[in-house]
Image (cartoon, rainbow, N blue to C red; front, side, top):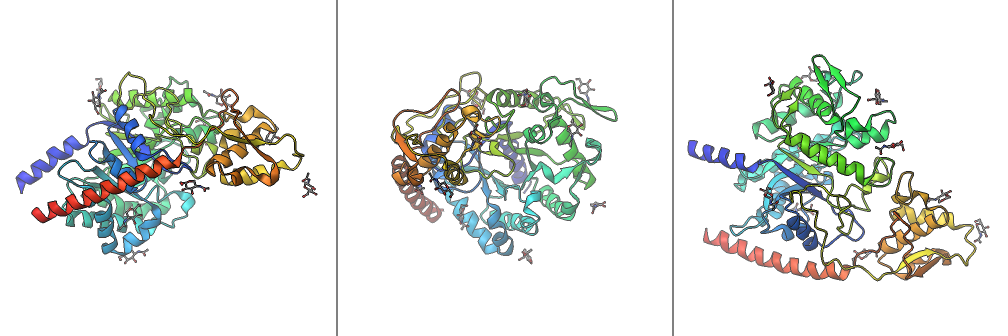
Length: 479
Ligand SMILES: *[C@@H]1O[C@H](CO)[C@@H](O)[C@H](O)[C@H]1NC(C)=O
Ligand SMILES: *[C@@H]1O[C@H](CO)[C@@H](O)[C@H](O)[C@H]1NC(C)=O
Ligand SMILES: *[C@@H]1O[C@H](CO)[C@@H](O)[C@H](O)[C@H]1NC(C)=O
Ligand SMILES: *[C@@H]1O[C@H](CO)[C@@H](O)[C@H](O)[C@H]1NC(C)=O
Ligand SMILES: *[C@@H]1O[C@H](CO)[C@@H](O)[C@H](O)[C@H]1NC(C)=O
Ligand SMILES: *[C@@H]1O[C@H](CO)[C@@H](O)[C@H](O)[C@H]1NC(C)=O
Ligand SMILES: *[C@@H]1O[C@H](CO)[C@@H](O)[C@H](O)[C@H]1NC(C)=O
Ligand SMILES: *[C@@H]1O[C@H](CO)[C@@H](O)[C@H](O)[C@H]1NC(C)=O
Ligand SMILES: *[C@@H]1O[C@H](CO)[C@@H](O)[C@H](O)[C@H]1NC(C)=O
Ligand SMILES: *[C@@H]1O[C@H](CO)[C@@H](O)[C@H](O)[C@H]1NC(C)=O
């Protein structure tokens, strides 16, 4: 028993080697094929990736790569997983066990129960199921003998804690409506030696508060400092982490490790959402975390063992919960072109872009100026309700385009999301398909990705899945 325990600690110690990870989401009208995404990860020496759900195509593509994976469970599944141990076992079997193989497989390190399930805008609808779902998944892992390899975590939004009205970290506490749930959650995490996972978006402070000093958010030397007793805070990350640590301490879990599940800076769709700011933020974040300066409450140590950048790629179907910038978190564009340079694991080398991307034809949809376009606004609204027009917002890359260029942008966005079908460029006869790129300066009119390629790679994935199922069967049979 003692030997096992020792091995467990050795493995756990290796497991949490400091690392930068990326969130790989798939809320796009034409997502990049998983094989191409995985090649981008490998080419840039990205060691960790976090998926919002157990997408079989993504997991198959990650198989055998050595990339470490955090797999998410969508909030919508929490109710079923809370009420049924069987459902939890089936989830683990289908989405974790299936990918374990002695010859590589997928290195799944952790399972994220829900995606910010306590977010205040959800009005508590998932709250009663979170801890129960986590417990059932943990039990299913024990049954599958995977509990030493896979950790169960619950990513929380930073809105789970606060320090009103002073804003001082020393007065941090969890949101009162979460009090008893948090106590259960922290007991669960502590018992299983799992970290507290927090998603932090300092950009939101800048976005929501015009007088918030951007330098303080972005790790630049700032004239703004927060004094809290003997402590002085020089950046927003430390302030927020220490507020969390005080909240944890108040409930008796002041020593719990903290891990950042999502952190980033958007590049479009709002003022201050620029590549230059994003680069400065991520560089500052990395330098700060690597310096082992700690925070005033946890000095001279690593603040977080791991953080996952939001996001690898832009996703044009992300919900606009806070603003248009939500679709522009990517370090890379939707088609895998680096927007700026940052170290994802490749060191000082430039980021490597995606290779072998197949686009649809070089065709765009624009407003037909030969028609009476006095009523085009209604059509623009229809297009933007379904397609992504966030680059047109104040501060966005196409904000200065003017009319009717901005109407053309909306039409094209819709047309590409509709796979360049002619119905996608109708708009009661006001649309016109052109082969002349309407892009102007920073304002890029995208061309969508070709899906035939995605379908081909889907067939390969299916074959791989069949083979791995057979291999799994043979291994289980032999052992
Ligand atoms: C969660 O599951 C437990 C065990 O099945 C059940 O007793 C409880 O009522 C469930 N919670 C909710 C809010 O449904
Ligand atoms: C495995 O995860 C996928 C993706 O979230 C989900 O659709 C599927 O239902 C899960 N399997 C089980 C048995 O719950
Ligand atoms: C939250 O829980 C703590 C510890 O159990 C308790 O001291 C505090 O009064 C609670 N706060 C609220 C608002 O329920
Ligand atoms: C905005 O930020 C400033 C500087 O941190 C702070 O003093 C002020 O209280 C904030 N305003 C709001 C409404 O949060
Ligand atoms: C942030 O946005 C404001 C308002 O547009 C602008 O005045 C300021 O220069 C911007 N700062 C940075 C660093 O982008
Ligand atoms: C942290 O390190 C600094 C510089 O090495 C040292 O002066 C300080 O006493 C240390 N603080 C703690 C709490 O260990
Ligand atoms: C790749 O990342 C690992 C750590 O994750 C690092 O040890 C190694 O030096 C990196 N390789 C290159 C070529 O940057
Ligand atoms: C514009 O809309 C108005 C009101 O729906 C309609 O009466 C008018 O005929 C339309 N004009 C054109 C050119 O379609
Ligand atoms: C397009 O530009 C015109 C003129 O600048 C503006 O009034 C209109 O609101 C813009 N529409 C969109 C969808 O951005
Ligand atoms: C575009 O093509 C993809 C893949 O074939 C398909 O999933 C999607 O539904 C299509 N979109 C529309 C709007 O037809």
